[in-house]
Image (cartoon, rainbow, N blue to C red; front, side, top):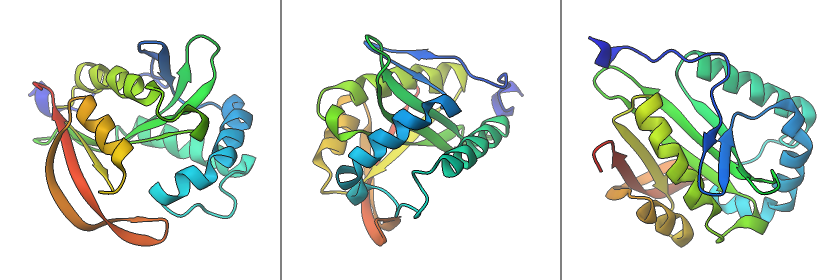
Length: 192
């Protein structure tokens, strides 16, 4: 049955257009802007992310990251995007769909980050709203899951604003900034 088959995408997936933003796969030419934005936003991002490796912002680490993204996409396991502002092609942040599960699940987990200068301006909301049709119509997923630390009010508002429903609470769900953190669990279904 087609429902249980994995999708077939070309080596590069399309640009996903949104309201004033677009998403596309990271490229090596993005390294300077990506490294600068991540470094500028380090103190803003660290409380919400896994511990950064010592070489995280190096060119070689970024190159390894791109190889992993390409392998994951070819294997239909994950899809990584960078988020850009349309007016000037400025890098805003990133969104990923990871842990793609096919068969009877047809689900993936969504993660996201925005650079500190672009937080609380609606860019990530527009990015997530652009990604949702791609996930459901192109990747043919049935469910997108997301999790956030209970004290991360901006993330909670983002998920609820983009149609995700809170489904539960997971104790020590992910290791964030070196500590096992409880998370609120959210999901959005194709029919929502």
